[in-house]
Image (cartoon, rainbow, N blue to C red; front, top):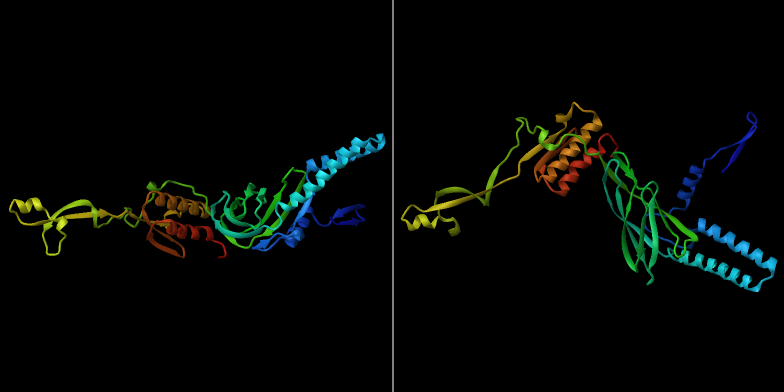
Length: 328
């Protein structure tokens, strides 16, 4: 930290905060999207237990010198040697690992998003107790076997909009917890945060101009609708053979299936709410319609998505809500 002496106060005033220094350090040493950790990017510091262990070994050394006890010297140097070996094992636990970013899963406002981190371990030995974490999010500890491993890491909860991936921290204290080896990966990418679902449930809304759900009946094989006169080309399985056996006119059975009701979720329906509340209400309706298996369309300023359903359709409807009022 840099300080500047001011004559007015007669004191040294810090010119750069610890947070700024940390951000500069991260930007300088963070690695690109696809990386392999080598010895130049791994840092090792003692943990609290490591500091206590070092002080204990130093006190034992002073006691051994004072009393000139050979067994005490032997125990002291044995413990010191174990500490040096622990440094090497802690360093080896993450060196040589390769990282790449997989899929980033969007989230709702206030909830953590998740990102796939693909880790390649080229050595036959496992890497134990490796921690992955983003600042402000819950860390994830895993054991990495030889080969490829996909790790799901949580991102901190954010407000609605589009956000850039932050810096991923990788660290380990294996095997004895005396030292911590760590490094940073600067991830390159964006992820969406949808509005927080909120508001009245779906059955309170009014759809279409008439305020009714629209349902249609299409040809199918589910529900029996009745009989009609036989026409050449009708399936023999659908002929009413009992009527033919009685000498009556041949009839053909009609079947149909009811299509899911189609509804329109519209921006104009929620004009009485504030902007964020509108987005949250529409988000709630989209999730309710999808969970109910309904076919729904979506309209808002600059967006007109026809009726449909399914995961892709749901994401296409949620995306404009996340990007509303932001630069795409």
